[in-house]
Image 1 (cartoon, rainbow, N blue to C red):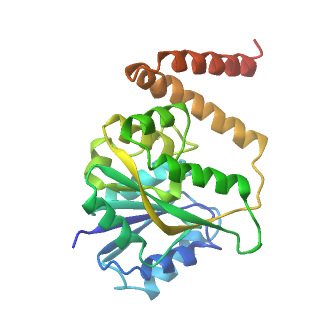
Image 2 (tube, rainbow, N blue to C red):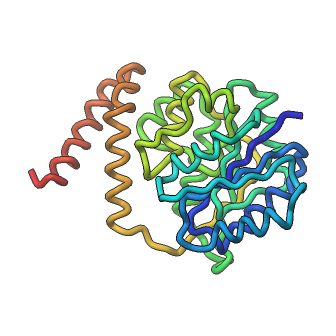
Length: 275
């Protein structure tokens, strides 16, 4: 039985983290190393996790807590967890999401049966404060992600180079050898972690495949995205384009798309500087 490192990344997660941890404890897969890595939460997330760990000693193969004395961003937070991980596979999940009981077992089986293919499972959107809420736009994005997972390698790579197509919590299950090989997550992209990692995967010759089961419950929030956070995301996406995507596009015969996106990003940069 191969050890799976489940890394839970938390920030201000005191109200939801117990649900996440309990869903991991209830997994049917018997060999799980649980690592909670917290990015200097200002609330009582760490205290809640410490109490849960004390009450659940021996429930899993190993349980670890990693903390930081300063907020560093999501990629760095996950990397701290990866440094302590000893598993053959890595599953990442946010401290407000949950997994079905057979999630890890299903992910491992898929990877064992499809070497070189990374699984994209289906997700269920939920809001425990508004159980009847419908999120058509997000669900539409998820459905397009599942369609993407059924394409061949070449089409997937070209689609991913144009824009992100993967719902983060549905994927994020990788062999640890791959994660080590690419050096973990890129910490220069503070405001997102999944898109750069998945581009690395496809550039290295891996593709994605549909694991046609709902394995992750993805919590929806009513908090609006502020203009300042959108600006930070745009700036990070622009950095990714000029540092990595531009060159990947040229290497894959997408020179015209690279030039077109370059022009768009230059306009965004000039607008920011007031030029």
